[in-house]
Amino acid sequence: MPKYQLLCPDLSQMPWQDKPAGEVTNSPLWRYSENPIIDRNPIPGVARIFNSAVMPYEGAYVGVFRGEQTNGVSFIYFGRSQDGIHWDFEKDKIQFVDEKGEPFMPGYAYDPRLVKVEDTYYIMWCTDFYGAAIGLAKTKDFKTFTRLENPFLPFNRNAVLFPRKINGNFVLLSRPSDSGHTPFGDIFLSESPDLTYWGRHRHVMGRSWEWWESLKIGGGAAPIETSEGWLLFYHGVSGTCNGYVYSIGGAILDIDNPSKVKYRCDSWLLTPEKWYEERGFVGNVCFPCATLQDNKTGRIAIYYGAADSYVSLAFGYTDEIIDYIKEHSNVSPSDTEIGIK
Ligand code: BMA
Image (cartoon, rainbow, N blue to C red):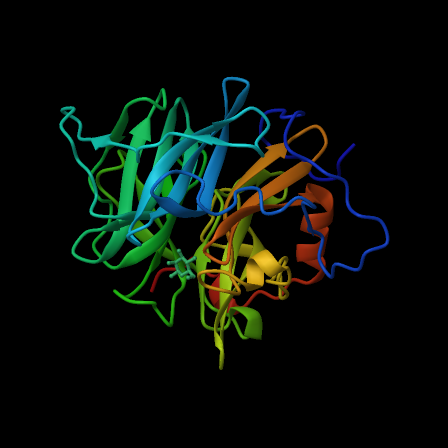
């Protein structure tokens, strides 16, 4: 019986591989031995798929994938999988329409997240709104993708919805930024009753004194509801003399008031170490965008982009991840306050 409960449906057939015996990993996570699961040139005209999100759907899996075309511009592509590991992609990018059914395509789209709230699936991505901003769309059938109004002014990235309303409102994490490669950044939270009007903005957590996340941080996978709070996998960036290094971090947010951080791991949970993370279009990037989890076993699979070139998988048990975050927790006064000034 797991110590901490995952408040999510069973997903006993989710991708999984046991922890390799006798390996020092310095983390409660371990990598899938067959990584990367999506290699280069996965679709005609698309050079790389990375930073992508998946979801269980009708007994199998669907996903929204960042496909960087051979002209260097990213859009979102739709894929299906029977096992969550081997993916079939649609050849054309997702064609978004507006609420009247008219074409409403972004100029570019990258780093999609996919979250189900009630009976609807939402996609959030970084869109072109006179500069980098948050794009938002919804679908119920993965056939029609209806793009909604952009929730925020530019510049902003790394939006991810919570998988249920909290105190009656939709809640979205985001990371205000600049128009370029953003050498700063904290995670904020905003609420909306209708996904059109957003407010009650709160600071959740900032870059920390820990060197691995001292430059900027950004939301990653949709927060996972557990008996201990919202388990958040996010990315933390270190600015080294050789460029940015993106690692995966972990925190636990208060269940009713998620702008309060209960625990925050002072050490990364996964950092670039394998060839497919260190070497690629942009080396030294582990960028989490989605998880799958099973409440019976407490298993979690993390989907992360590797080196802006591949999609990879890491695994862990909820109990071990939460215990590790608690044992290595270092929360600052700005993490634990309500987040408004
Ligand atoms: C960020 C985003 C991510 C990317 C990362 C590293 O600014 O653009 O898509 O993975 O940089 O290049």
